[in-house]
Image 1 (cartoon, one colour):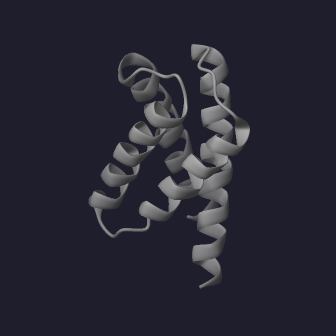
Image 2: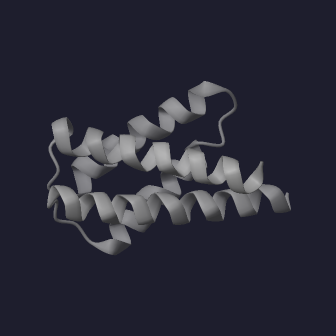
Image 3: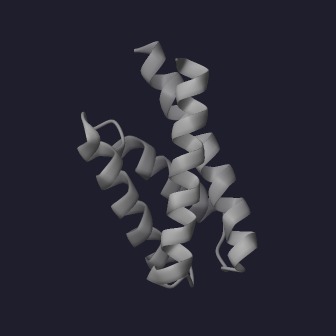
Length: 97
């Protein structure tokens, strides 16, 4: 249970950080509170077992980014999701083993 809470918190933190940085790189406008909600929802969906959780998490993140920010699906939202998911998976895996 504690490991899942730590995994959720670290995934949300790294996703939020990566989304915030990528929003500034792509010059997408959105609020920080929206980024936190997008990262948290995506992290919760990422708990679905197998690779389906990662895929669903990325799809939901793309949809929420397009809905709550002024990002277009391609290239901004997809770029932001790829960067966020890649760095977050690498960071959480290296931290939690």
